Image (cartoon, rainbow, N blue to C red):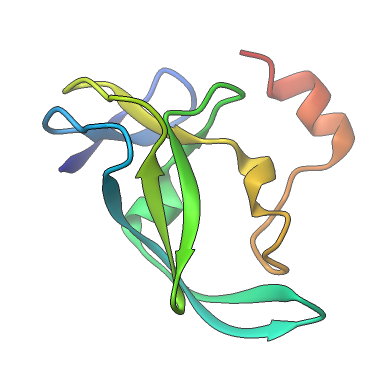
Length: 110
């Protein structure tokens, strides 16, 4: 459903290897190993989780199913399109790096 390739956003990214319908589960990104104060703790990270890039207008959203985070398509994604998430969607996960406000303002503009 997805492949790794050179990204025009930053370094490498993940791209749709086929047409992906809105609402489809794209793949497993992170394992969750616990919870503290109603926030999750991430464990293992997959290639999908480590290589996706940020966009203020993402094509996917992280969704929790059981003890894993999967990416789900927000809209139809054409084959060859980069699959992105808004990094700010990880506010409920304690140990997934989140950018500082200053960095967001200077680097997250689409």
